[in-house]
Length: 97
View: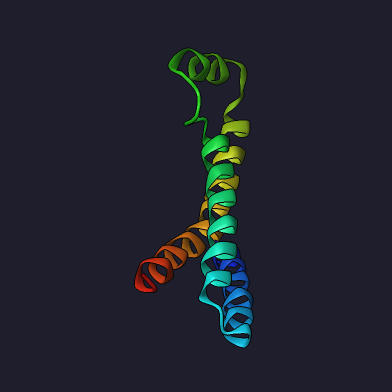
């Protein structure tokens, strides 16, 4: 779990260094925001929070406990990769207004 958070911070560092080198904060919040939204969206899809109640019940009935645990683990990893990027992209965007 810690490795996925470090991976997200690593991508954030690369984007921040690129934005600082090019002296354009728009690069930072654009790419970090896209990366954060992508991984947070994947986490939402993996948890099943983007479907209606009848679909959730059908998916719960068809999947095993092992499958649900694996999807939850991957959703957590994706969220930990995407959330720091999304958070800092929002901070940089609103501080540059």
